[in-house]
Image (cartoon, rainbow, N blue to C red; front, side, top):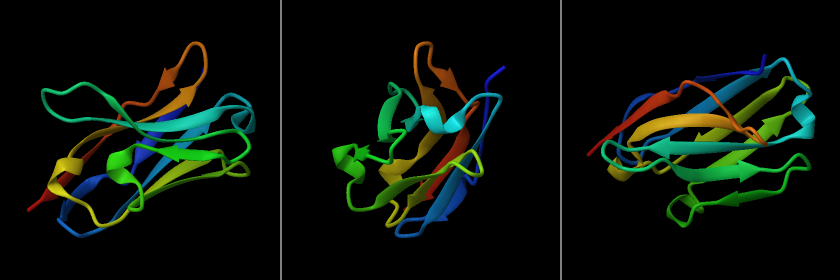
Length: 114
């Protein structure tokens, strides 16, 4: 059974940084694209960043230049380095395996105070 477990969320002041990690298990991690989504209260879940199986990345316009997605295929992990955080980055961040079906982690809370 595919399992995705996020970690690294927390409370940070505006301008600060956090590094999220997602540990994947029970499938060939390197074969699949991975993504980070977030959901703010009262809003729809939105794509933050994605990385292909070969390392190609793309980002939401709102995080370009501030966030970096990376993957370590040897450790079955995907990371999201978040710098220059803003209060509008607050939300629950979800890791997912981009496939059909899509698999989701349970999420990790990120709160950015002003």
